[in-house]
Length: 345
Image (tube, rainbow, N blue to C red; front, side, top):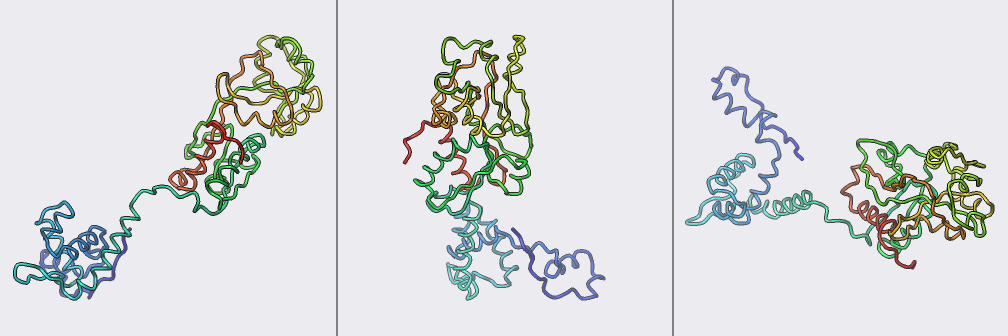
């Protein structure tokens, strides 16, 4: 935070013939590279203390330095400002007219410096204005939107939320600001992206009420024999369940692949296909990611296979890590997906 002031008069041509010591003294007041011509925040702080205290000793105590060091700083200020600033009058020092003119301005500059260099204490959510853009799969968006809307109404009514489908490569989109937060299964490894795991879930088999699988014990064989709908934005037919079934020499029939969880659950609600839905781990609080399936009336069945857990997290660009509004957004996502939920308002 430094700027360079203009130099005073140029050196005379004869200065080049002076001795090194005299030439050095001359260049101090005229060279554009002279350290005295660079704005120094420490000098501003010292000037404020000296003009407020009108005493080298008291100014030194105020800034926790020695009187000798403060005396040297006063001498430097006198050279920079080309004014005595403080002159002795009996046992005290009194300010010059230039010093009196600078007193209020110096105090204002120091206050602004203090505010500039003080860590952000966090934004007041009620004062936030604007729009946050989140990228998430449709199921994540359906689970997040009600809770985030409730928190926004209660705490940050000036904010709007925009959800995007997973149609952008997250790393570049976070970097250039097209999205503010990605929420979901964070599978990209970008060293400059900040990632936080939010919750671990398991997969359950979602079927309509009265589905044959709801009767009796669900075995791997019965699960494999049913028709399945798979959710994949890339059109893939296979996933972790197929790997687990293959270990038992079983293979399921995938009747259809859809790019949307909501479309797959809607299909399962009106047919005999089986759809995989994330749900809370045993003993954990209910997950809002199961709410859309519950709304559609689907039954969630434990899968009798050792499937890997599903990790849901959020990712953001480090430039927004300390931003008060973005911190509120991340905390709101945590409270929606992790903390116990309150009734909707």
